[in-house]
Image (cartoon, rainbow, N blue to C red):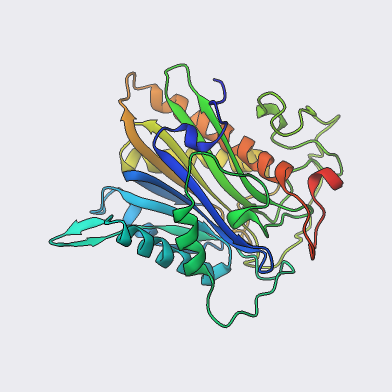
Length: 326
């Protein structure tokens, strides 16, 4: 297993990611899209999720593919970012065909960033416009850290952000992760600068500091946020041809990466979820290929989480320090 050429989720050929954000608002939107619909599913493990259109992603539901997946700040207000993405897709003639009509399929999930120091006293919900702009900005290359839906993200002790990573398996399949880290838990180990995800780091993608001298297994971390204020939302995508049922299993396996990289994770106070997506470009060969994909998904998501915190940068009004300043 090795990183893809960009070490981004867009190493899965055909996928693009766009950000739009507002520095004063300290919030934004990140969109994953492609030139054609792609299969997707989802699995939720947090106790306080905020989602839209996720019921459509169940294996027994009619719609075979989606046009985009949206990760947004703004708590429930941020779900309106999907409206802006839908409008942009509609203008582009995209969507699920129903007779002569086309309906863009745009599931989404949100993080709570309403108490992060940004100006939230808006007269009109800003998220539809941010969603529209994020879809328009989608490209193969995109920034990590304090951008898009991660611009105002926080963790239990440090600024969060948006992260991504990729891996190319020995089978030739590519898998990547895109994540917004706004967790109740910590990505770093105790008071050290090392990351919980250090065992899965490739090269020096998040500092290359290696393992801490010890892991505080007996530490009981107190919650730094209140009910509903914390969420880590992610997308794991591959070019391996997986149907919705297999993608749901991939999403389940991906949550292991969240638990490896954030302590604690999947709490009653978090809305942790993972979307899984497939472009279907590479047929599966050996039945064990799906086994390898599940392991790789967990590893790549852990790496993406650490990269999000590692890449965060300071801004006026921040309530938390960045990793490199701590």
